Image (tube, rainbow, N blue to C red; front, side, top):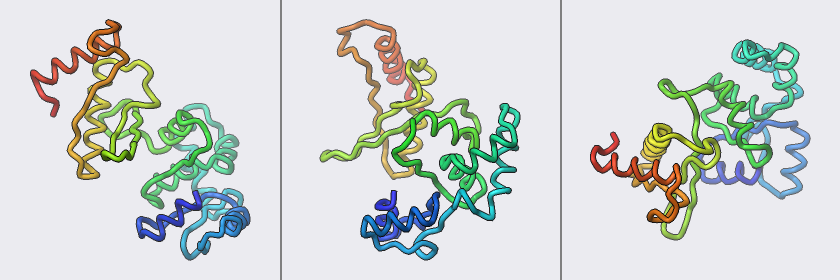
Length: 207
């Protein structure tokens, strides 16, 4: 994450906000030989001592209290769960985006983020979009983490969500629906579902 911070600054992409103990962050900057200055190059949210702590706890409990999260649990999570802290910063408008890093299970990060930020109007679930940068160009795969066996309607929704997201990169998406069956080699539910969707899209293109 610290090396990513260095790149963000060098390429002037963003001004990072790091979540962690200042002493630990400074020690790792020195260990990795990075040219980063806390407080100048990036902001720190210190879970152990941040003036916004009470406000974060109050907001978090207001969002999840009806789901059975007690005030004590809310206080503990805002002290220890960096994904929750980052999501709260986004919710409050103090950050524009959140990167969770490599530690932890994907679905756990999704649950924490969803509990704080919620869903876009008109949607009832999230989906994952992964990017592969290859010699031939960039390829995007969806849904690689959330839905194990999506329905036909969910496949359509996921495909349209991916298409709309790619527009942010000025990429005109061309979608391929994949299953483990090649040209009818195995006629299972997932394969026939994709086949029906492809036939339907040819008759009436998705908009």
